[in-house]
Every structure is written in C-alpha cells, then in structure tokens.
Amino acid sequence: MYNNPYTVLKISSLATVDEIKKAYRKIALKSHPDKINNISDINERNIKIKEFTDATNAYNQLLNNDMADMNINNWEETFDYIMNSQIFKDFINSFINIPSKIIKHEFKLDISYNDYYSKNKKKIRIFLKDLKEPIFIELDCKKYPKAIINYLDDNDNEHEIIFLLNIVNNNKNYYHIVNIDGSIDVIYDMIINTAEYLTGNIREHIFINKDLLLIKIEPFSNKFIINGMGINNGNFICNFIYTPIQKDMWDKLNTDDKNIIINLFNRIK
Image (cartoon, rainbow, N blue to C red; front, side, top):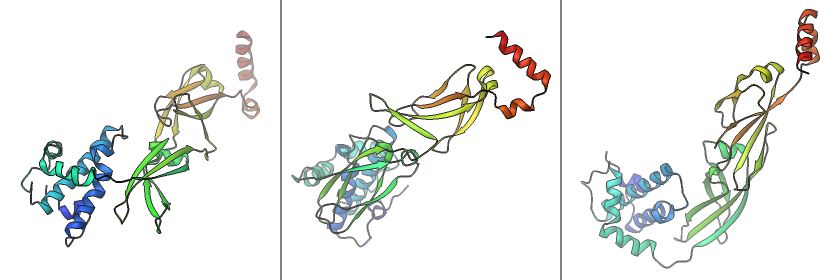
C-alpha cells in the first residue's frame, strides 16, 4: 500500500526542504530506536519503530527520490535496510548526533485510578520555561511512576519533559496499598452473605476500566486475587466481607426454618 510521504510527515505538499527535514527530525526525536529505550512494551516499541520507518521512507522519497519502489508493507525488512543504509548514517550525523543541549523539565502530577485505567491518554496543558505559549500533551498514565516525553519547539530546541506521577484515590469504592517493589495493589471490599461464605458463588463485578470480571467466591475464603490487574504490575484484590444474617431477612423466615438454622449452628459450635 502506498503511503503519501507528505501525509506521513504531516506536512503540506508545498513544504520546503527545511520544513521536510524539521518534520522528519520531530518524528525521529520521538520514535528513533535510541529514544524508545524506556518503552518495555513490545507492541508499543514496534509501533514507534514502524512510525520511524515510515517517516524515513517519506523523507527519502521527498529529498532523495530513493526507495520509491521498495515494498514498504514489510516494515521490518525496511527498518533493517534503513539502519544499514548510508542515508540513515548521514541522518544520524546531521540530526541525532549534533551536539545540543536537551532542555529538561520535571513536573509532579497527580493521577486518579480512572486516569491510569483509561483507554485514552490524559490531555494536559503545560508551560515550559522560555516558551511564550503553552504546549498540549497527551500523556499515557500507564507509564506510572514516570513518563518521559520529547518535544521539539519551533526553534528546533529539544525538550525532555519528565512527569513524576502520583496515584491519588478519588474513588470511594476502591483503595490501594503500595508494595515494596513499587507495584500497587488495588483493593475492593465485596459484601457476601452467609450462604456465599458457606457454599461459594460467582459474582459479576464491573472494574474501574469497565471490564466485567467474574469473582469466584470459594467456600470459607476471604479474598479473590487477579494477578497483574493492579497498578504498575500490582494485583487486584477483592476482599470478602462476611455479614451475618440480617434481622429483616431473619424475620421473613418461618419458625421451622429458623429452628433448622439454629440447630445447624448449635452443631458446629
């Protein structure tokens, strides 16, 4: 499938050479292999590498009329070709390895459970020192506890923006504990009745991210754990809070049923 190089670089078809180079550098600063070492998720790394590969193809097509006939559907082969090509080495020398001071910024940011579990990135506006206008960033809160974003301003200055994330609880139904390794267990207290405590049950529970969970209540158990569903590789823990028979429920029973229950409990005293 043909990718329009102007669309890939997000520039006008009337863009100048300098504008093409600037657009390419902006993408490379975010997606170049040297810039994604802090990304551990394989799928996310592949997305970044493909973005860089597509941008390099577009750059070469516009400035060098190169690789126009290459099968760009196989982006992994294209990436290997790029990494070993002379044009890529020239790019490294002219863009990536230019001695320049990266301007670093550090922000502390509180995020909620909903921010962390949301399928969408958190949109924030920040002001950077020496820049007159605010910049708008889409932050992936799943990077907790630290997210790093590279930004290229209009003067070609590279900024490294570091967000130190702090989890705050704004949900009355859940709470959390921070483990020694930095992982966070998210906890929910589920009220269960006498029958569930004695014989077990399976309950449906809608989690923070709107996933429907099946909570298995084993007889005489006090919790159900889903590994890895907490924050930063922590767990989701569903505590079972057993409540005795309520008076209104007891009053609905007839005398014979009450006597049967009383006899049963007398046997296990």
